[in-house]
Amino acid sequence: MKNIHIAYGHSGMTAQIPADNLLGIYESALPPAAADGYAEVVRAMDNPIDSPPLELLARGKNSCVIIASDHTRPVPSRFIIPEMLRRLRAGNPQIDITILIATGCHRETGKDELTAKFGQDIVDNEKIIIHNADDDRNMITLGTLPSGGALRINRLAVGCDLLVAEGFIEPHFFAGFSGGRKSVLPGIASRETVMANHCAEFINSPFARTGILENNPIHTDMLFAAEKAKLAFIVNVVINSEKKIVRAFAGNMQTAHLCGCDFLKQQCSIPIPPADIVITSNGGYPLDQNVYQAVKGMTAGEAVCRKGGVIILCASCSDGHGGEAFYRTLKEMDSPQKLLENISAIPRHATTPDQWQYQILVRIMAEFHIIIVTQHCDHQMIRDMKFDAASTIDEALKKAFDITGRNAKIAVIPDGVSIIAQRA
Image 1 (cartoon, rainbow, N blue to C red):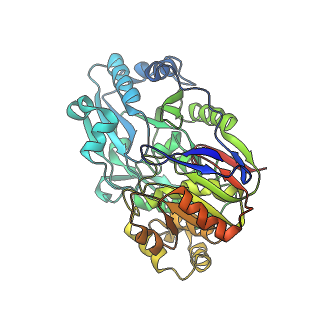
Image 2 (image 1 turned 120 degrees about the vertical axis):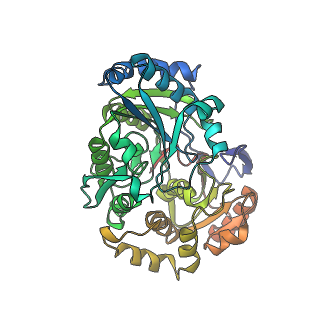
Image 3 (image 1 turned 45 degrees about the horizontal axis):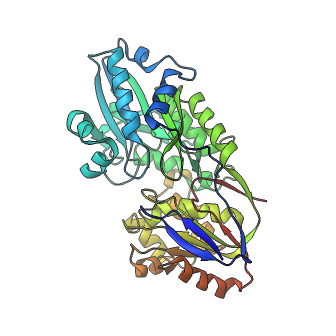
């Protein structure tokens, strides 16, 4: 038997896998975490890529907006935001700074969650505004996206003299990679703009996949939005499975981000033989708080699982399904295949809330049997959404073997959002 540890919630999950069935355990080859995460951020900001230092950018500016990640992203903001604030004020002590929380279309970030991200001092003493994608009064139109949709973003970002952002870079299941331009779209964009960018046509593109930027229509829209918003400087980090900083990248919104993506691609592109069963995760807390987010981890299984095989996804889903419309759509669907056909026929301008997430999900459900392993979520709700449910990996494996046979080959991907899985 082989012991495995899978990312799950705050603590992880362990199990034993029969050695004869195990193809392998596939993890990124990231170098060790920086000895001092804060020092790594300082190093990157001392050596900005294709950009003047943040201190110099702040000179002569009356106002600055820092776009910061929300509660669904494990960005180590405690290391990044204080240093950004320090440098902005070193360059211009009078600059008026607002931290704008990039919720995209997620729920509002709570005060306790803000404190956990930034620390009490920043929550008590800095101006923090939480973006609301549905607050049309606070949106400004900046033109038309390549997708044809209206580009509307938070007026705070448009009205400031200097727009900067923090974030992290990881493989992303349809944008190629997170970070960089994503701070603007979807981070601080209107729901209308996000809908246009996440349309069925673009999600169906073979280039809208993990680790791909070139010819990716979703990335093209996002980059256009960040350029129009005049995103001037980013501080992005690559983190490991323990959410510790491995490398930081700072400077020009596009080239600093690409440097981070290239670094990650070299470490995280992993060939995996076709498997009958894939055991994976959504990276643990905070990415596995709900079923909605957990779709990302499923795509790692999709990339390497044989058609008709089983994807076992470990995710706490302690926050439930992640969206009422998302839940209802899956509960009420006749079949994944039928829903996928219906979604594919929806034009760009008519994209509906959460459409992209269940489009990708039913694409996977149409090909594989999915078992969600959770001890923090109602199993009946999971079954209502047409998944199977289990409380432990052992329980899920028993169900998987009933479907695939006892000789099934198993691939284990402990953190499904940290790698670029490629079929060997």
